[in-house]
Amino acid sequence: MDEFWLHPRLGTATRDGQAPWHYLVALQHAAQTLDADPNWQQWWQVSGLAGCELGIVTEGRLDHLRPSADIRRVDDLLRANFTCELPPAGAGPDELARRATTEIRTMFAVIREAMALPDLPPTPEPSAPPANPDDVPITAKSLPSIPRELEHQGYLTLTQVQDFFG
Image (cartoon, rainbow, N blue to C red; front, side, top):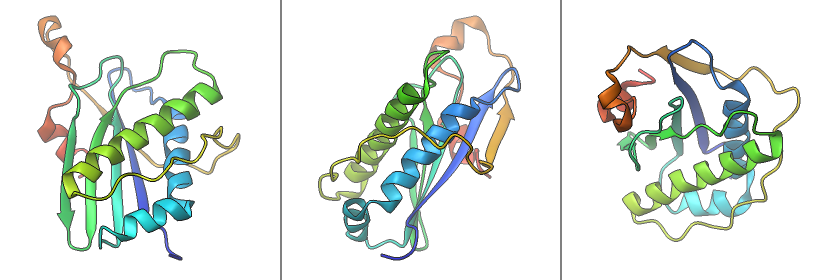
């Protein structure tokens, strides 16, 4: 497989306008690692689809109830949007890489089940993201305040996740 099959789209729902840039870079790096892995390329070929647009939305200090996923086929692509838990403040590059790899694999476990695909291949060992990555395109949307009694439900509804990347 010569072409990329995995196309990550990164987003963040913020209240303070600050994107968790280092973690989004780690998520992109984890996705690119899977995209380049021959075992994962072969696994994806079984789907019969040309590619997967993987939308990942980080939500701030609260994570949406799991699994929060919107998975649908659009022509010869799978479009899958997920919410993603942020790592704790102060997490270093190795921790970010480990968490990002775990999150991406968890997303593909949901995709695998939804599409009745074979078991996931082994995940390549997480590596720290590049120190000077290219610009990572990030969709950032501010969220309105929610009443304190609703905070335990998470920030984004499934409809908001579906519509996040337009």
